[in-house]
Image 1 (tube, rainbow, N blue to C red):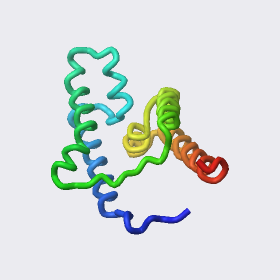
Image 2 (cartoon, one colour):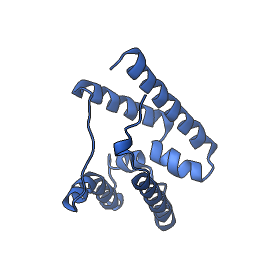
Image 3 (cartoon, helix red, strand yellow):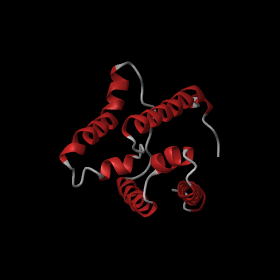
Image 4 (cartoon, rainbow, N blue to C red):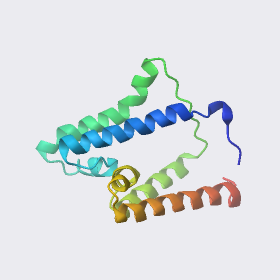
Length: 144
């Protein structure tokens, strides 16, 4: 494995991590809720009228953020080399894993670990181990 040093952005990564952590804390303090993306999205089906607006605003922010970034002069440096079938299969597997784990990486990895939740520690270790194993298998064994 090699690192693409020309696109290595530790400053932007650190800023993004700090911003995510700050937003998670603010969200918890103002709403008393954990900032877990899968839980927020799952709450839309079926949506309660009192909850629908903030959940839709969250979804709109996630979908519009790249467009706002590009409108401000930013560039998206992303290249997807997987087939549509592989992307769909991966999305379904992530969805199944999220349901089985009772949350996603943002809920368990960011919010749960910061609250010292043993359940979130186990879930995050499983997420990471599965991701490492899948990356190794796809890159080195299957050569996908």
